Every structure is written in C-alpha cells, then in structure tokens.
Image 1 (tube, rainbow, N blue to C red):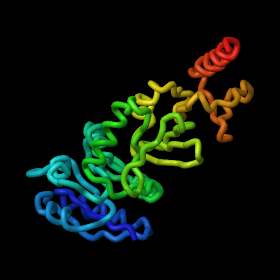
Image 2 (image 1 turned 90 degrees about the vertical axis):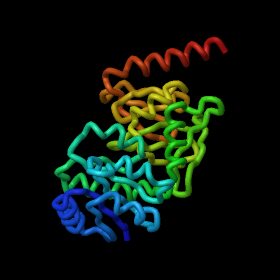
Image 3 (image 1 turned 60 degrees about the vertical axis):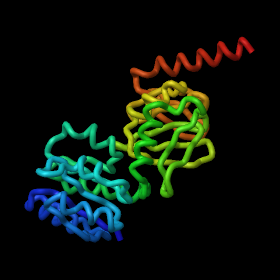
Image 4 (image 1 turned 120 degrees about the vertical axis):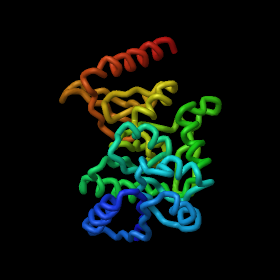
Length: 256
C-alpha cells in the first residue's frame, strides 16, 4: 500500500488530484489532505508515509519553504504546479517528479510507477544535500560517487560504472558487478560530473565509460557493444567521438 499526502492551497486542485489518484486502480491510500501548508508542518514531522504531492506557489508558506522548515523528512516529494520555471529548484530537493497542472492522468501514473521501481525512500535532508554536493563536485579526491539506496547512501567507485541510461528525469547506473541503481537526476546532470572521468555521451539517452567499450559496429546505423553485452546506438553527431576513442586505443597499444 502506497500512502500519500496532498498539500495544495486550492480546493479544486486537491479534489481533482484525489479523483485522478482514485482512478488509477493502484494500491494507494490518501491519508491526509491540506489546503494550508502551515497546518501540515506538524503532521509531516510526526507521521510516516510514502509520497507527498506538494504544490509550490502557496500563500503563507510555499512548498520549498515548507520542506526547508523540516529538520528531516522520510518521504519522497512530487512537486505540482502550473509554473514550470520552478523545475530546476524542485529537483534540488531530489523530487521524485515534477507534474505541471492540469495534471495528466498518464503522467501521474508514470510518476507513481517510477517511484515504485526506484525504491529510494527514507533520505534525510542532509543526505539529499550530500548527494547534490557529490553530483556537483564529482568527489574527485577518492573517485567515488554517492548514490541513494533504500537505506541511505552507497559510495561506488566511478571506475566500476559501465554506463548510464536516462529515463525521463531519472538516470540508471549499470555497474561492473551487475548492480543497478536508479537516481532522480537527469543524464545531463550526471554527464556534467562524469565527463571529467572520461565518460562519453554517445546518444541522447546513453553515457558510456570507454573502458568497457568492446566493439563499434558501423552497420545498421552504427552501434557499440559494451562489455556487459548491451548494444547501444550511436547518434550521427557522436560517431566521431567513438572513432576517436578507438583511434586513441590503437595509439596506446602501439606505444605499449
């Protein structure tokens, strides 16, 4: 059972969202609804649940201010708003998703499906901040990256990352030991960190570690074969990158 709390200052918005959630035919329980964020503060501190659907622009206390007022929170956040300029700031809170009003039923369903698959609950505000700092700075000193897991943070060696694949506003990490992680960060954000470690974006949805590049097949539009067996198409604009990588490998082999 997924437990949900809804906070929105507009009555018609909370009523509409409740109807949409009820119509999903999922194992969901709406346990509380608030139309005043200030009245929700104590409830959020004292109760345990899974997902908070939170409006951003509200009188008295907006969504960001509400989260900042909590010393910690053990739930994931889905920001809901009519103003898409808040998107970047919303993801600084590692929001599960960002839904624009009026909320589309399919986008709502996909949002909850992704949350169920992600299974990354129970991170404190400090852990969120640490994750953001790790993503921004790359933790270059020890070559590790902090990724959220069910129980907190897991530090993984960047050299063990084979590839990363985007899924909407999320990124899958595929590791050498066949482990997989899904984090609430775009591939573009991840690329900004990992390009320092030699990772290459070969497709809109794929970022690879050249150390695990096995073959480049020029036929069928061009694709690479990774050491984990994954075949990844190479976009036209990135074919020169792949050729350059193999040329560099050849030069290094000649030197050795």
